[in-house]
Image 1 (cartoon, rainbow, N blue to C red):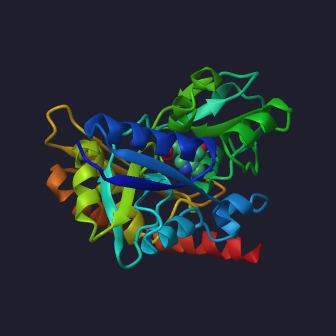
Image 2: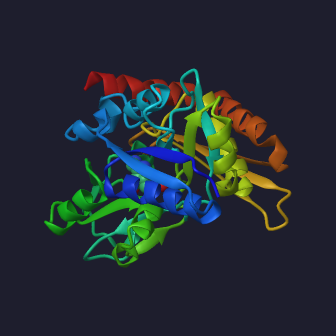
Length: 315
Ligand SMILES: NCc1[nH]cc(CCC(=O)O)c1CC(=O)O
């Protein structure tokens, strides 16, 4: 029993609320009698829905307001999709735990077709992710990629209205919102290497809040933490957030003693794609991410990314 109240700062999209409710339920499960409150916030990223994220500076767009509330002691924790969490935290805040990962893949969503391969010549595919765009274009240069923004429900509505032949969404988001029936097919990691952190939920809190950190401990999943640590280290070394055509994806073998990290850097048009991979023990996760990033940089990643940044600044 505990008389502690935990205040969760959360965005109000269906997915953000699902994640906050999930953490609330887990805390209540592990600590009977605990009080957990949800405090809803609107972030800049929720307001600026018309511009492609890559053009309004994606970094931290969805987390700033939540962090301000925690620093002001108006909230205790924030629950994030690890894919959207910036690499560095403000002084006084940090990631306390990473929860068990949902499926990390991308999903092909369409009312007419089952797979990307089935799409006819010139079909229109909705995504605002440069990572997804680059990998689709590499396989299918004939397809038209059209911007798609908004929360999951908005994106599905735009598909249903006929604005797109298919759209790409994270499998995890659809599963969590109980919309598995909207997944026409899961796209393999070979065909679309996922974004670092995709499908994983992390919890941020004040670094000096030992009581909250102790309460959060049982929600931690070490396998997910190893994987996401390697992925984020690669992203950090490449200075990429989720608004660049960078993919990084780690898996742990069944014995739990070998981490396999794959990385990709591409030009948005998919004409240049660099891939590399390495294996090591999970305690080397951070170092693996850095090493894989450096191997990609040696192979020309910096030049490819410089070109991407130049295009997004050109408007
Ligand atoms: N880019 C937004 C975003 N951030 C996290 C998810 C959902 C799944 C996850 O936890 O990674 C999504 C939606 C999507 O990419 O379709």
